[in-house]
Length: 191
Image (cartoon, rainbow, N blue to C red; front, side, top):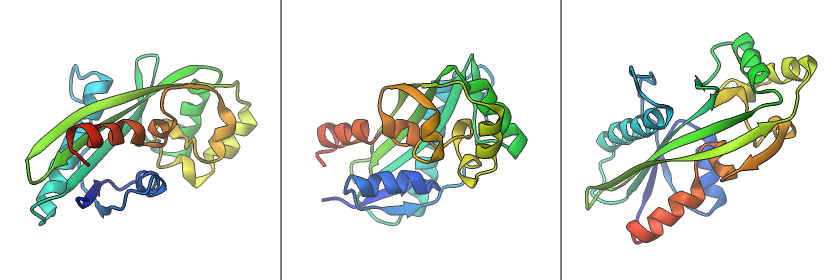
């Protein structure tokens, strides 16, 4: 088996790979996450994942292995909801999502170092929240788990109780579509 490098600062992504038994080494890329003019949400996450992969690739000295990078956002009503800038920002995001359906997009990039072969794509999952009370929103906004998550919530944590329905891959909402990635690793990378 080839060595796997995860180009991510997210402990959730690392946890997902560990849960499926994929041993990996973490490489923390520093990429400026900003929306370009006229860029669509799926283009944004795919581009950022590719940028993270390219930055990480420069740090990796190995001549073979697989690099995986990802970027996740939440979209609602044409608006991109990234990580909250403050507790109030996070509460405002949750208020927007309360009782509504939104989409979670994760762009991912996978590279075989030896073959210099890269695939960049994205996965979309639809999530519906039940109607939340102001008290629930305030209480959750005070938790640390909401501060480093797109859309200001971590589905694998206390926010699980907000979810009414999900359509698509659950792990994608956590931050890494592991089912889709393993499918690509198996079919395209002979992993």
